[in-house]
Length: 382
Image (cartoon, rainbow, N blue to C red; front, top):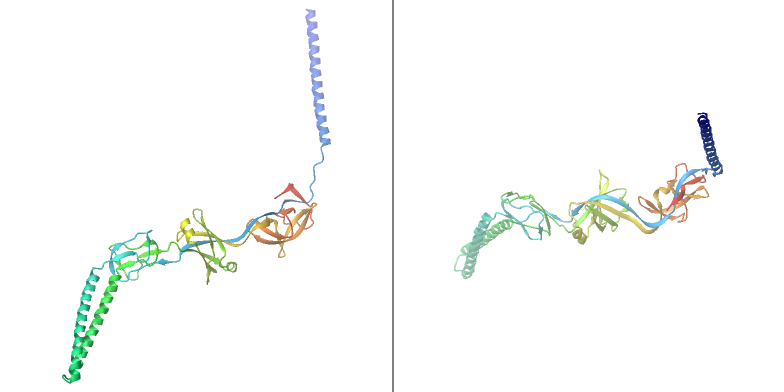
């Protein structure tokens, strides 16, 4: 029994000793790790301290640039015909529908002609009778002239014969005038197209009463089209005949054209004038451009295909001059540049810098010549 107690006591001592040594080992390991971290901290290089204004830079690149103006306009036809009735008659037939193509002389509308035809026939017979009567009176004059010259009849009788001839001639002229008037009215029962084009509108139906002077149909020349834009007075001096124009239509269609003319009248309310841009017939047909369409017009004022370019927001204006800031040896160097064509994104640099210079992009408002600067993210954009 005492042996068992002795063994138990010995085992307890060994167990305690093992736990003690384990704790000592863990503490030693923790100390080693901690010392290693401390050594690493002491061996780390000091964090770089930036001095000055943080900037981002770009370098100039070569590319194309276009200076332009944009306007919204409307497509119109050079020729629109709106034939109207010249007489008051019932519409007998409408020969076309909207969208039909017509040529000059094609019949559009036929008015009732029965009464007018009857009148023409009656007056034609009257003219024929008047011609016969005149011929008879002319022969009488010839016969009585000989008798009068021989003294066989009184001069008074001969004068009456001449009078009758003249009256017959007047009656014939009157009958012919009435016939011509009736024939014209009959001709006006046929309303024809005056131009080649497309029927844009039909404003009357068979059975309606046509009123003189009221347009019945609208025919539009669908090939010879133009775009009209309203240009404000400040931009007018920049626009010249022949200037390139890029015209965009709904559905992704576009046409290359040139400025035609500027109308010599300024609207007193809008302070703008109308500028006309003719559209090439071939492209109108290919692109299926229609009168009445809206059009986005880009007028090309100037363009270059190979220019030295910088972003617009890298150039600052001071005292009517253009400047950029270069970065040289950690300093901002204000440099005057000569600029050329610009668009919404880029500006042409004619002189002052080259493609090797680092140029500050979007210079801060407090940036001045000679100030210390440092590069954000350590580099520049091209």
